[in-house]
Image 1 (cartoon, rainbow, N blue to C red):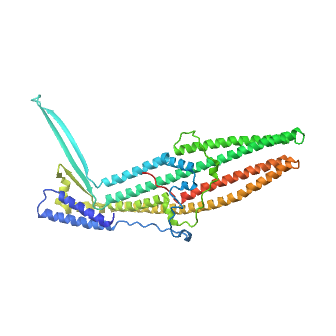
Image 2 (cartoon, rainbow, N blue to C red):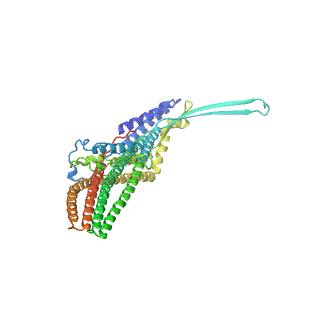
Image 3 (tube, rainbow, N blue to C red):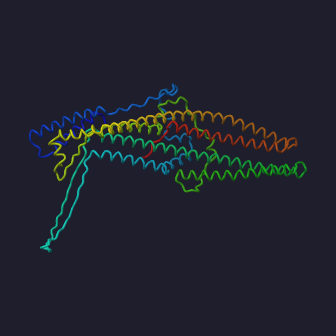
Length: 486
């Protein structure tokens, strides 16, 4: 609310005080009322001049972050997970958004903040109270005579917002409510990101279990081959024991993978509100369907989409309004009350002797100037703290984006290199297999080559997982939130 609107409201409140006063007559009262309006109007004018105007703190940004902002809604969509084109992932995230416990708490916090706005605004409206009384009495001389008396009362009171203090409180509550809304969006982003992470962990484990099953089959064939060679006296007992140990290791590794899958499934079930022990069918293919590349050249303005940046700036605005609240809290307040249609004595005294009443009220802040200055300075320090917090969040957002962009690029390069490594490992394994079958190579060399293949494939799967997770981190760093139902 701007200064002109505040001043106009204050003058209307003074007029309301005048017109609600009944039974006032005479030139003295008229002159007093005029002086009351004039003095209050002048004070309102002084108060309105002191309203704080928000300006975003200066931020130091490198030239590469100053590229013109374009329409990036298609590149960074609200429902960012849909860019992976995985219906199972979509379903899990949407379910988490609807049922997650942390998100439910954030929604309740938002509703509570909204009620604080209502409570702050109600101070500017009449407070109505009523009462009913019933009494009975018996006379000593006439005990059979009972006197009953019923009484009712109705009163209304409200505080006139001459200086905009109540309006400032409403503004502050609204900024906090909007910040709470961003808190909810931040929680939602975190929940969606965590669900995606668990989903790809399950895809990674599914990939590892599939490859482990292939390894077990390969080791079983190797044991059969060594057993045959041992039976004809070509392979030694040590070779046979080594082959059997390799098979046993592969089978043990499978048990470890199954245990890891159970743990991740339990974590995912908590995130989306399913019963503990729920099993999820996640294909290993999800790990290899990488999303399209995100274009470079991200403008810093897009960081304003981040919920934590929004919340920090909204709370900075709230802190600015708290300075005005601290300042106006020391201005005189006028309570307008009425009971049974008759104005209160306090109001009558104020209107009959406005100069004395106001002078007495105005003297109060000056007598406590030290306290007033201390509270105002405290509010200013709180504002400065929020400035520091906002800058910290904003610069951390830049760091998050830089790190995420670097990670996505690095992991994609790793994927390309590891794909070549897997191909080379298979070639090496085939060569050692041929040597062993014709008796020109040792068994251990073949087993080592097979282990190298499995390690290369595992590294490739891990790199694919890292690409997917870093893509999500980039979406989160850029503030790709989404609209949630209220």
